[in-house]
Every structure is written in structure tokens, then in C-alpha cells.
Length: 455
Image 1 (cartoon, rainbow, N blue to C red):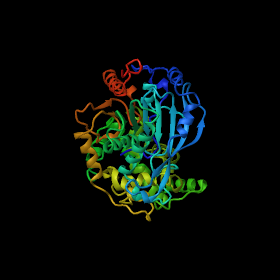
Image 2: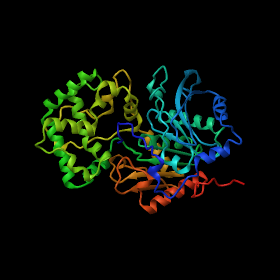
Image 3: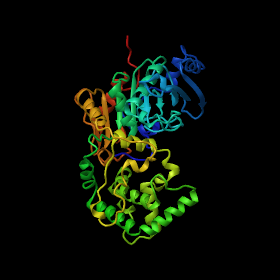
Image 4: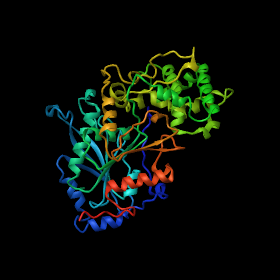
């Protein structure tokens, strides 16, 4: 469904310069707030929040911002206090307690650099990032993966919002892209009142894991016929030259000091990469990139390099894979995944289970799929969800099965020529204006970025 790389929709102010909102200058807002909260008092205030640890303040934030790396104690199991606690990593971009606050999720580990998400730029707001449980350093000591559920993660976010609302009492907007967008939606499902609105970018919605027909139809229609055929041809070429490519793969792994114990072999890992190549191509590219696809007469070096670039061969080896075991566990227990078309590869495949999430999770970690989890989320979004904005790229296979919210101040907007890396800036002018209008209204600021008075 979504990419295995850590995609984050984090943009600079320059990337949103063409949008209709010009946020109030953070530096000016910060100066105003310091009349009440002194320049050093934010650090004192953070240290006064129960269960919060200020790990460090880092340099490099834009003028008017301060950047903190934080840790907060969270229950390992929100339903059982006796299960103990773990420290969850947070980051904070602080500009002013007077500004809106954006709750940002990657769905993976935290980004430890002071970059602002698109809604943060547009609103000139604070940004609080929550690292997902079991990712990065936010790992419970007992590593009981049965506690890696959408509800437990939503409860993590809920406790963070409750804690930080003591300092930031204005409007809150949640956001994220890909798995981060999904995380934001799941948080709203269980704690709908925590934030005033949600902007979810490129968020897949795999309602029924047994039915992947929407993804197959998408891959059979996206782009040009010539581009689709070129992708099928390069897949066949890679499998026909399997021995040569696997030898290169094994040589790389040996030089890198890694292996394929979890997946099983370099041969199986290569087959997985080949299967996923068209999906990953369309996530990152468009039909205009047809020329980058190697032809049937290309050399093995070119073929291997293209496959590595598109499918990320390092991801299937043990060193990188250990960081993504929680992701594959989630796919195989609640989120679901997509199967890939194989009819054109008849006679060339060796591993029927190659694309299954179980392939990427060590066998000592039990997995059982919960078929009720995603239908529950989907029903809530459609029947009860409010103030939800989904921003999708029309060329992105990940959202072949999108969320479909009801009429409660919610919309799905499509960027016509965009892929998985979409943004409000890529929407049509009319849709962009509508999206910005929704965002600013939820956040309680005017189109010029000024705070709306509550008096």
C-alpha cells in the first residue's frame, strides 16, 4: 500500500510560497508571547510538565523558532498500568503559545531536524512531532509486539495532546503523510476531540485485506500503455537474469556486513524487489520518467542499479530490515498490504509468499491478522469523521483505495499530476484555495495568518 521508505511531508517556507496564505511572522508572534512567557521560560515550562524530559535544545531552527528534543513517559499498555512504561521520543518546534499547534506524525521514527510540515508553514504555528511506538528509540523494554496496535498508538497521541495543551491552548491541527497520515486518522478515530482538524496526505485505506482489486486496476491503467509495458518487460528481464543480479546482491551484502536471515535468501529478496518495482515506480515517478526504465538489451549493471534505485534493495537485508520489523508487523496484524500482479511473470517466480508481511518479521514474533481493525476505521471516517482533509496524488498507487469521508466538513482532494509526494501546492487553484480555507478556519486564523480573536 504505502512505501517502505520513511517518507515525510516536510517542506520549507519556499515550497509553499505560491499558496494563498501568508502566515504571520513567527518571530513577531514569538516576541509578543514573550511578554508573558519569557525567552527562557519555555524551557522552564517544558521541564515543569509531568513525565516530560527535555533531552536537548538543538540549533538550526528558522528565525523565531526554538527546537527541542524531548522524551515523555508512556504506559506500555494503556489498558494495564502494571505493564510499566517506556520513553517516547518527541520533538518540538516552538514559536509562540499564541499560535496554533500542529501535531505531526511520520508513523515511523521521529525526524531529528527542525523542519516544518506544510500546515506548520502555512499557519506559522508550533509543531509537536510524536515518534510512533516501537520505532526509533520509542521501544518498550519487553518488546511485546501485541501492544503495537492502532489503538495503543492513538492513546499515546492522546496523552501527548492532553499534556501539551497545558502550554498550547489554541487550536491544534494533526497531520502526516503516508503511514503518518494513517496514524493521524487512527488517532482521530479513538480521540476525535483532541484536535480541531486533520490534514492527511497520501494515506492508504486498505479496508479489506483480501481484496486487492483496486490496486491491480490502478496499476493496469496508470500512465501510458508504453510505460506500463516497459515496467513489465524490465521485471521479466530481471528475473531472467536472476543469477547475475543475485550474485551482485550477495556481493553487496557481504561487503556491507549484512545478510538475509529474516527474508531467507538474496534470491528471495531480489524476487520481492522485482515484484514491487512497478508499484514503487509510480509512487515516485510519472509517465514522463519512461526513459529511465532500462530496455530489454540493457546491461546487468544498469538493470541492477535501476532496481536498486526504484525498490531499495538494502531494505530487504537484515541491517535495514531490523528497523522496519514493527512496520511489517503492523501490516500483517492490522493495516494489511497489497498483492502485486504476476500474470506476466508466469514461470519465473519461486516464492509464493514473497510479498507477505510475515516474510519480513522474525518467526519468534507471533502474528495474527485482525480483520475488524481497518473496517472499523473506515466506517468511522465515513459515518462520523469530521474536519478531515485528505490530499492525494492521482498518480499514486498507494491511494487506489482511498478514505471516503462523509459530509462533516471533510473532503478528499486530488492533485492531478502528483504521486506519493504530494502537497497542497500541487492541487488545482480552486482546490488549493478550498484546502487552505478549511485549514485556516479550523485553526482559527485569517487568510492573512492573523489569529482570530476569541473576545
